[in-house]
Image 1: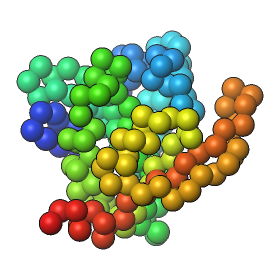
Image 2 (image 1 turned 180 degrees about the vertical axis):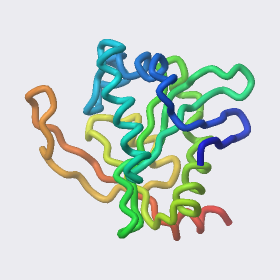
Image 3 (image 1 turned 90 degrees about the vertical axis):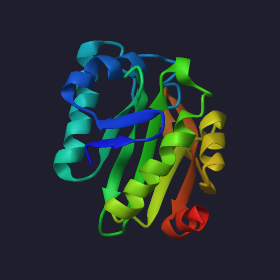
Length: 180
């Protein structure tokens, strides 16, 4: 699905022309503090743009830019990666520009992503992997009914430091139960 709309936002699939907006977010150390990527230059951001393109081409995911309906301003990005059709699951990801943190944007757009994932993509499970120290993200996932399943202790190396990652998920049956 190339384009989706909520009351205040529209999501459109990320395209090569979005590189300046993606760079604005993924070059900011506060935004990428808990991510595996950081692109200090526009040229380096090409790697991320190729990743978005490869997801779509390989059928392993899709990402959208988040934009204001009235002013068309770029707010951030969200999407699915690690799409596994055989096991009917995918990992969800999201990030917002700092000036839009704490405004309830994700709470508004996530139901649209759930609908897309559970109906159009035929998923049974949507997963979220969050660095253990990323309390804001974990709190946001819990507010939209993700379940904390556990912690993978010291499972990744970031900046020469072992970090732990929390696993969250929401199942199609849980999403459907929350619709009523």
